[in-house]
Image (cartoon, rainbow, N blue to C red; front, side, top):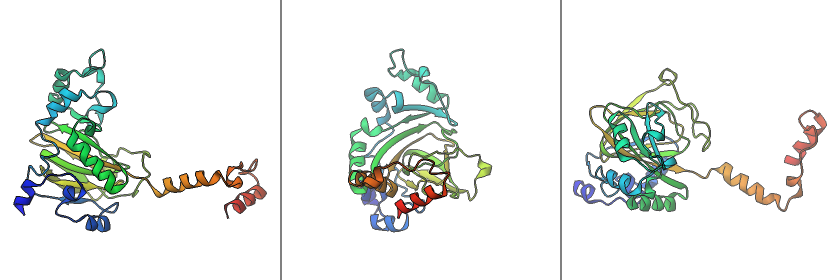
Length: 273
Protein backbone atom coordinates (compact mmCIF):
# COMPACT_ATOMS: atom_id res chain seq x y z
CA UNK A 1 0.00 0.00 0.00
CA UNK A 2 2.74 2.48 0.99
CA UNK A 3 4.78 1.62 -2.10
CA UNK A 4 1.73 2.30 -4.29
CA UNK A 5 1.22 5.69 -2.65
CA UNK A 6 4.85 6.65 -3.15
CA UNK A 7 4.92 5.75 -6.85
CA UNK A 8 1.45 6.86 -7.92
CA UNK A 9 1.20 9.50 -10.66
CA UNK A 10 -1.94 11.58 -10.15
CA UNK A 11 -3.70 12.09 -13.48
CA UNK A 12 -7.42 11.46 -12.85
CA UNK A 13 -10.18 11.43 -10.23
CA UNK A 14 -9.42 7.88 -9.09
CA UNK A 15 -5.84 8.95 -8.31
CA UNK A 16 -7.02 12.15 -6.64
CA UNK A 17 -9.12 10.41 -3.97
CA UNK A 18 -7.26 7.09 -3.74
CA UNK A 19 -7.78 4.73 -1.91
CA UNK A 20 -11.48 5.68 -1.90
CA UNK A 21 -13.45 4.43 -4.89
CA UNK A 22 -15.17 7.09 -7.05
CA UNK A 23 -18.46 5.18 -6.75
CA UNK A 24 -18.31 5.39 -2.94
CA UNK A 25 -17.50 9.09 -3.12
CA UNK A 26 -20.44 9.81 -5.45
CA UNK A 27 -22.96 7.96 -3.27
CA UNK A 28 -21.82 9.14 0.17
CA UNK A 29 -20.06 12.49 -0.22
CA UNK A 30 -20.68 14.37 -3.47
CA UNK A 31 -22.65 17.57 -2.62
CA UNK A 32 -23.50 16.03 0.77
CA UNK A 33 -20.62 16.21 3.23
CA UNK A 34 -16.93 16.98 3.56
CA UNK A 35 -14.32 14.27 3.12
CA UNK A 36 -10.78 14.22 4.52
CA UNK A 37 -8.27 11.64 3.26
CA UNK A 38 -5.06 11.56 5.30
CA UNK A 39 -2.18 9.67 3.72
CA UNK A 40 0.99 10.51 5.70
CA UNK A 41 2.78 10.41 2.34
CA UNK A 42 4.05 13.94 1.81
CA UNK A 43 5.00 13.47 -1.85
CA UNK A 44 1.80 11.80 -3.02
CA UNK A 45 0.93 14.78 -5.24
CA UNK A 46 4.50 15.51 -6.37
CA UNK A 47 3.58 14.63 -9.98
CA UNK A 48 1.16 17.57 -9.97
CA UNK A 49 3.23 20.32 -8.36
CA UNK A 50 6.05 20.92 -5.88
CA UNK A 51 7.22 23.92 -3.88
CA UNK A 52 10.19 24.17 -6.27
CA UNK A 53 7.85 24.59 -9.25
CA UNK A 54 6.35 27.83 -7.92
CA UNK A 55 9.35 29.92 -8.99
CA UNK A 56 9.14 28.40 -12.47
CA UNK A 57 5.46 29.25 -12.81
CA UNK A 58 5.96 32.82 -11.63
CA UNK A 59 9.13 33.40 -13.64
CA UNK A 60 8.03 31.77 -16.89
CA UNK A 61 4.28 32.34 -16.77
CA UNK A 62 4.37 35.86 -15.28
CA UNK A 63 0.68 35.74 -14.27
CA UNK A 64 -0.96 39.13 -13.74
CA UNK A 65 -4.35 40.81 -13.71
CA UNK A 66 -7.15 38.45 -12.65
CA UNK A 67 -4.73 35.52 -12.73
CA UNK A 68 -2.89 36.78 -9.64
CA UNK A 69 -4.12 37.86 -6.22
CA UNK A 70 -2.04 38.84 -3.21
CA UNK A 71 -4.20 38.77 -0.09
CA UNK A 72 -4.11 38.78 3.72
CA UNK A 73 -7.12 38.59 6.05
CA UNK A 74 -9.50 39.06 3.11
CA UNK A 75 -7.75 42.30 2.06
CA UNK A 76 -6.25 42.16 -1.43
CA UNK A 77 -3.03 44.07 -2.01
CA UNK A 78 -3.19 46.62 -4.83
CA UNK A 79 -1.53 45.23 -7.98
CA UNK A 80 0.51 48.46 -8.18
CA UNK A 81 2.54 47.01 -5.27
CA UNK A 82 3.80 44.04 -7.31
CA UNK A 83 3.34 45.05 -10.95
CA UNK A 84 5.50 47.33 -13.08
CA UNK A 85 4.13 50.35 -14.92
CA UNK A 86 3.52 48.17 -18.01
CA UNK A 87 1.47 45.72 -15.83
CA UNK A 88 4.17 43.06 -15.99
CA UNK A 89 4.96 41.14 -12.81
CA UNK A 90 7.66 42.47 -10.48
CA UNK A 91 8.93 39.33 -8.79
CA UNK A 92 11.04 41.16 -6.20
CA UNK A 93 8.03 43.14 -5.00
CA UNK A 94 5.84 40.03 -5.06
CA UNK A 95 8.24 38.12 -2.84
CA UNK A 96 8.52 41.13 -0.55
CA UNK A 97 4.73 41.04 -0.13
CA UNK A 98 4.90 37.34 0.69
CA UNK A 99 7.57 38.08 3.32
CA UNK A 100 5.16 40.67 4.76
CA UNK A 101 2.53 37.99 5.37
CA UNK A 102 0.53 38.01 2.14
CA UNK A 103 -0.68 34.86 0.41
CA UNK A 104 0.14 34.53 -3.28
CA UNK A 105 -2.85 33.18 -5.22
CA UNK A 106 -2.55 32.08 -8.84
CA UNK A 107 -5.98 31.59 -10.37
CA UNK A 108 -6.39 29.04 -13.16
CA UNK A 109 -2.84 27.88 -12.52
CA UNK A 110 -3.41 24.98 -14.93
CA UNK A 111 -2.83 27.50 -17.73
CA UNK A 112 0.80 27.73 -16.60
CA UNK A 113 1.56 24.12 -15.57
CA UNK A 114 0.89 21.16 -17.84
CA UNK A 115 0.39 18.40 -15.19
CA UNK A 116 -2.43 20.45 -13.66
CA UNK A 117 -3.90 21.14 -17.07
CA UNK A 118 -3.95 17.40 -17.79
CA UNK A 119 -5.65 16.70 -14.45
CA UNK A 120 -8.30 19.39 -14.98
CA UNK A 121 -9.09 18.10 -18.47
CA UNK A 122 -9.42 14.54 -17.16
CA UNK A 123 -11.66 15.70 -14.32
CA UNK A 124 -13.86 17.59 -16.78
CA UNK A 125 -14.20 14.42 -18.81
CA UNK A 126 -15.18 12.55 -15.64
CA UNK A 127 -17.58 15.13 -14.18
CA UNK A 128 -18.81 16.88 -17.36
CA UNK A 129 -18.48 20.07 -15.32
CA UNK A 130 -16.00 22.94 -15.70
CA UNK A 131 -12.89 22.37 -13.58
CA UNK A 132 -10.28 24.97 -12.55
CA UNK A 133 -7.15 24.83 -10.38
CA UNK A 134 -6.00 27.67 -8.11
CA UNK A 135 -2.73 27.78 -6.17
CA UNK A 136 -2.25 29.27 -2.67
CA UNK A 137 1.21 29.95 -1.23
CA UNK A 138 0.82 31.16 2.36
CA UNK A 139 3.59 32.17 4.81
CA UNK A 140 3.60 30.84 8.35
CA UNK A 141 1.17 32.21 10.95
CA UNK A 142 -1.10 33.80 8.37
CA UNK A 143 -4.61 33.66 6.95
CA UNK A 144 -5.63 34.67 3.44
CA UNK A 145 -9.42 34.64 3.72
CA UNK A 146 -12.03 35.08 6.44
CA UNK A 147 -14.77 32.47 7.07
CA UNK A 148 -16.88 32.04 3.92
CA UNK A 149 -18.44 29.41 1.71
CA UNK A 150 -17.92 28.77 -1.99
CA UNK A 151 -20.67 28.33 -4.55
CA UNK A 152 -18.71 25.53 -6.24
CA UNK A 153 -17.21 22.32 -4.87
CA UNK A 154 -13.56 22.45 -3.81
CA UNK A 155 -10.93 19.73 -3.58
CA UNK A 156 -8.06 20.97 -1.39
CA UNK A 157 -4.78 19.29 -2.34
CA UNK A 158 -1.94 19.93 0.11
CA UNK A 159 1.42 20.07 -1.66
CA UNK A 160 3.81 21.40 1.00
CA UNK A 161 3.60 22.13 4.71
CA UNK A 162 0.34 22.07 6.66
CA UNK A 163 -2.83 24.10 6.73
CA UNK A 164 -5.32 24.12 9.58
CA UNK A 165 -8.94 24.22 8.47
CA UNK A 166 -12.14 24.98 10.35
CA UNK A 167 -15.41 23.75 8.84
CA UNK A 168 -18.80 24.84 10.17
CA UNK A 169 -22.44 23.73 10.01
CA UNK A 170 -24.36 24.47 6.83
CA UNK A 171 -27.33 26.86 6.87
CA UNK A 172 -27.81 27.08 3.10
CA UNK A 173 -26.83 23.81 1.39
CA UNK A 174 -25.83 23.71 -2.28
CA UNK A 175 -26.04 27.45 -3.09
CA UNK A 176 -26.64 28.57 -6.66
CA UNK A 177 -23.41 28.73 -8.66
CA UNK A 178 -21.89 32.24 -8.73
CA UNK A 179 -24.49 33.59 -6.30
CA UNK A 180 -23.62 35.87 -3.37
CA UNK A 181 -20.86 34.48 -1.15
CA UNK A 182 -21.15 35.91 2.38
CA UNK A 183 -18.18 36.61 4.65
CA UNK A 184 -18.99 35.46 8.18
CA UNK A 185 -18.08 36.60 11.64
CA UNK A 186 -17.05 33.58 13.67
CA UNK A 187 -19.84 34.15 16.21
CA UNK A 188 -22.35 33.61 13.39
CA UNK A 189 -21.11 30.06 12.83
CA UNK A 190 -21.77 26.83 14.68
CA UNK A 191 -20.47 23.27 14.81
CA UNK A 192 -16.77 24.00 14.39
CA UNK A 193 -14.73 21.05 13.10
CA UNK A 194 -10.92 21.25 13.00
CA UNK A 195 -8.88 19.43 10.37
CA UNK A 196 -5.12 19.68 9.84
CA UNK A 197 -4.29 18.93 6.22
CA UNK A 198 -0.69 17.85 5.65
CA UNK A 199 1.30 17.38 2.48
CA UNK A 200 -0.15 14.47 0.48
CA UNK A 201 -3.63 14.82 2.01
CA UNK A 202 -6.86 15.96 0.36
CA UNK A 203 -9.95 17.68 1.76
CA UNK A 204 -13.21 17.83 -0.20
CA UNK A 205 -15.55 20.71 0.70
CA UNK A 206 -18.99 20.75 -0.98
CA UNK A 207 -20.37 24.14 -1.95
CA UNK A 208 -22.19 25.86 0.89
CA UNK A 209 -20.03 24.62 3.78
CA UNK A 210 -18.53 27.63 5.63
CA UNK A 211 -14.78 27.28 6.13
CA UNK A 212 -11.52 29.09 6.84
CA UNK A 213 -7.85 28.08 6.91
CA UNK A 214 -4.67 29.30 8.63
CA UNK A 215 -1.02 28.38 8.79
CA UNK A 216 0.84 28.07 12.08
CA UNK A 217 4.57 27.43 12.46
CA UNK A 218 5.28 26.60 8.81
CA UNK A 219 4.39 27.89 5.37
CA UNK A 220 1.89 26.12 3.15
CA UNK A 221 1.40 25.43 -0.54
CA UNK A 222 -1.92 23.98 -1.60
CA UNK A 223 -4.11 23.69 -4.67
CA UNK A 224 -7.85 23.98 -4.87
CA UNK A 225 -9.56 22.13 -7.68
CA UNK A 226 -12.85 23.95 -8.16
CA UNK A 227 -15.71 22.14 -9.90
CA UNK A 228 -18.23 24.59 -11.40
CA UNK A 229 -21.36 22.54 -12.06
CA UNK A 230 -24.06 22.66 -14.67
CA UNK A 231 -27.15 22.70 -12.44
CA UNK A 232 -30.63 21.32 -13.14
CA UNK A 233 -31.85 24.92 -13.27
CA UNK A 234 -29.33 25.61 -16.06
CA UNK A 235 -30.55 22.63 -18.06
CA UNK A 236 -34.20 23.59 -17.61
CA UNK A 237 -33.59 27.26 -18.47
CA UNK A 238 -31.82 26.31 -21.70
CA UNK A 239 -34.50 23.75 -22.52
CA UNK A 240 -37.28 26.34 -22.10
CA UNK A 241 -35.33 28.83 -24.24
CA UNK A 242 -35.05 26.27 -27.04
CA UNK A 243 -38.71 25.31 -26.67
CA UNK A 244 -39.72 28.97 -27.00
CA UNK A 245 -38.56 28.94 -30.63
CA UNK A 246 -41.47 26.61 -31.47
CA UNK A 247 -43.99 27.59 -28.79
CA UNK A 248 -45.75 30.93 -29.26
CA UNK A 249 -47.09 31.00 -25.68
CA UNK A 250 -43.57 31.06 -24.25
CA UNK A 251 -42.59 33.99 -26.48
CA UNK A 252 -45.56 36.17 -25.60
CA UNK A 253 -45.38 38.91 -22.98
CA UNK A 254 -47.12 38.58 -19.64
CA UNK A 255 -50.42 40.54 -19.56
CA UNK A 256 -50.25 44.27 -18.92
CA UNK A 257 -50.54 44.83 -15.17
CA UNK A 258 -50.17 41.11 -14.52
CA UNK A 259 -49.15 41.71 -10.89
CA UNK A 260 -52.15 43.89 -10.02
CA UNK A 261 -55.14 42.09 -11.48
CA UNK A 262 -56.80 38.88 -10.29
CA UNK A 263 -57.96 38.19 -13.84
CA UNK A 264 -54.42 38.56 -15.18
CA UNK A 265 -53.11 36.32 -12.40
CA UNK A 266 -55.55 33.62 -13.50
CA UNK A 267 -54.35 34.02 -17.09
CA UNK A 268 -50.73 33.59 -16.01
CA UNK A 269 -51.61 30.48 -14.03
CA UNK A 270 -53.46 28.99 -17.00
CA UNK A 271 -50.41 29.53 -19.22
CA UNK A 272 -48.24 27.66 -16.72
CA UNK A 273 -50.51 24.61 -16.66
